[in-house]
Image (cartoon, rainbow, N blue to C red; front, top):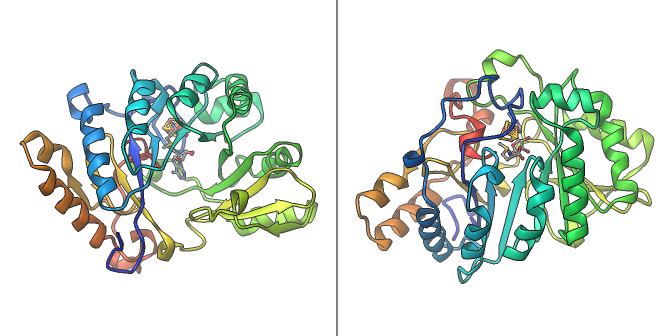
Length: 330
Ligand code: SAM
Ligand code: SF4
């Protein structure tokens, strides 16, 4: 279905939990966040009902995210049920990769074929310091296992932060020379409670591109196997097997091609990552709404999707994004 700004909305990101086995410094405070209780998050049955209705409005792709989706019990069975929804063409997952070695095979069997793994440093110590709890080697084993099992493409999400991992841009880019990965550099966005405290500055992807270009000429591709690739601008280093994606949410505005909605872990439907305007689907479901009520509300959220993300609005119209990334799902 098209929104009021003539954008086709066909992609839903679902945060299945706000819990996580890591505490990345740009996403969560050290002590974690005040976590939602079991009853506060949507049950799998509720998510299945929402997705089934959303498919009727034109959603064809769902990405499972979190928090860390692999820490929620029953995820594999849930994916199998999701996979049975008629009209849903693509189910993908974003994970920090810590538990991926054990989950890659069952997830593939359940119907997921494409996966994104977040990895912000290739240095064991630095990885530990950015995630506070993480073991880099588990993630590497997870990525290898995913490759072995047949996931394709495997995308590696790198949040680039000035003064933290800007010295690793080339190391990440070089991964694509022999491996069929798409390494995606994502500009850090100031979202949630931690944003005001950490003082991080995003590294512009214009700089990332320059650094890689100085090493090896980047050629523009149309995305993985010729398919357009959402907000990422996709390139390939000369002779490389894999690709480089640049997601420049801060330095370049790509709202005019945004095709997504987000379902938060606590059941709110959100039309824009960077705007806290949400509709509470969970309360509606739990007060016994009909499927057609639900469908009408989803359609309304699509129609009313803001033209431009709040972060890109003039200062006077700008609203702070207070919800945390782990609830929204990135
Ligand atoms: N836990 C999973 C993971 O880390 O892949 C899934 C959830 S995480 C919120 C989804 C994505 O959002 C990750 O790639 C993460 O690096 C990214 N992310 C989190 N906070 C961010 C921020 N402030 N700016 C940009 N990306 C962010
Ligand atoms: Fe957890 Fe992902 Fe946030 Fe890191 S980015 S704390 S792995 S939810």
